Amino acid sequence: MKNFLWNKLLDQLEAKIDLEDQCLVYNDLVDGYYLRESAYAAVVFATQYKITKLRRYEDIAVKLIERLLEKSTELEIGKMPEPYWNPRGTTWKVGSLPSSILTWKALTEANKLMDGRFELKHLDYSLNELISSSSVGVGSFAHDAVPSHSRKNRTPKVLNTSAMVCYVKSVQGMSNKDIINFLQSSIRSDGCFTYFSVGFSQHIFYEALEFIGGRPREYYIKLLRDRSVYFGDFIHHLGVMDFLLCSVQNSGTNEDKILNLVLRAYEFVKQQLKYTDGIISLNFTWEPELTFIRYCNFRDSSCYFVLLSVLAQLRKLDLITDEEFSKMEFGLLGYIENKLINFDVANISIDSYDANLEEINKILPRASENIVDKMYHYSRYLSYRSEI
Image (cartoon, rainbow, N blue to C red; front, side):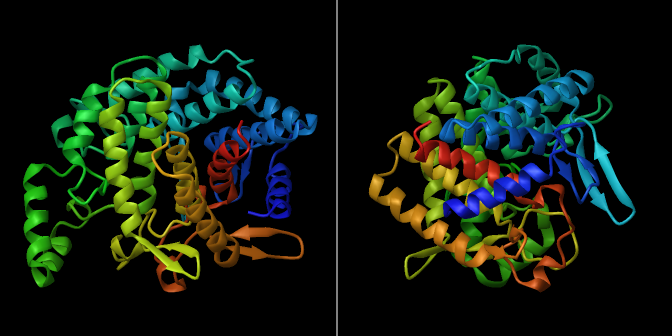
């Protein structure tokens, strides 16, 4: 992304922060402050400070971290609320594993960029409590805390939240062996990390249906819908890769097993790329068809930014060549600049979805649609490019 585009986005993000009062990022959709986005913004400005050495960006990053630490002590990091928009207003779900871990992760990254000047250890206790209450099997975790009266064996096992916990354990120096074994048993034979773990029998069905194809596969997908071995999306697949790569860089345990999983998942990604005159776009046709209005992450344009961050980590670990990395980043950045960024006299916006209008109209709005999420992942890519 050209420097003037990035700087323009930085100005827009800064304008969303009330530095004199709340000192948090304001989210227009939920009409309030989403702490995960504020933690993401702290990483963005801390990265910009490390690159430019400008005190302005340091001050913003410090204020965001200080305010987040105040709020996280008040709310407890393990009870970070996650907003869900609906036509009647916004509801906030407490006990969200993704919201809590992503906030904790971003705070940890921002603090590291600021040379560890803040004490974060006190946040671990409530986060570990949430992780424990979200466990639904050996090495597997749900999306949210599971009520004590619920039957955990009936609660879906989610791959991306399990990968998040794998990362947390690596940072805390704890064993992640069971989680790696769970993910190994859950990854599809073509390298796809589906959303849920679907069990051994569905993996057998997958092999048979891929061989037969046609109507049997169509009927199977329609019958099981979100619980089928075909249910998944790009953003969660890349998210699992991202957290596994972060786990490796924080702990050397189970490194070979983790990297094997990541490389299998990367092969799947490469099969879903489209090349046009050096420009690279993502093929979202493997994601579920949007047949009704729903909450989902399908066709999410943040995938381009997460993939840039994943590629930077793959290159850092010498898992891909410099030539492959350069080709991929040039192609992806070309698509972002030419297809996803919209120019306006006052502002620059990034399309939330890489989809047609008919598809977009079937996706209910999400708090993470705005620029903060994309800037966070892009800043992590910038860290590699700037050798921070």
